[in-house]
Image 1: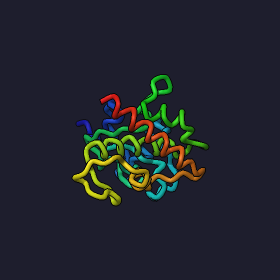
Image 2: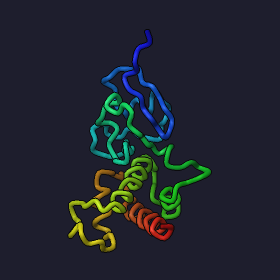
Image 3: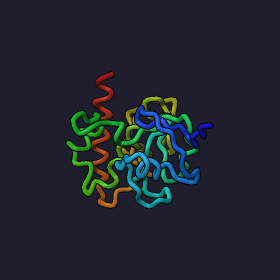
Length: 175
């Protein structure tokens, strides 16, 4: 009799069965078992955001969750957002605005910003949203607050902000 996997993970549109230790983090399964090393292990405590991935449309720190908790979930890593030959709008904006220096935080920044742009599009409020019923232009403080869980040790925050603004403008223009 075949043993049921501990979790069936859909990662970047591909189905994977995980039969390993149920105590393993999603981050470790992505990196070590699936070979998706774009997602980085920074602090391993949920404080830096380098391990940010998108699960069912919401951004999470993959170091803080167990892989088995994501049975049947849709997981998107940086590898699922774009490729070197076909960058996403946000990835291209990061390149154009030099939104990275060492690049270690970049995958988490891009995953977080990808989900954040969708949150804004859907009208989700943040801690600095004045009135969620209004639809004013998104202020820099709003973007900074929404991205505050993603740290950049190099301090490329202004360039990251410029890249996000550019990608948001391109996304709006395309709609």
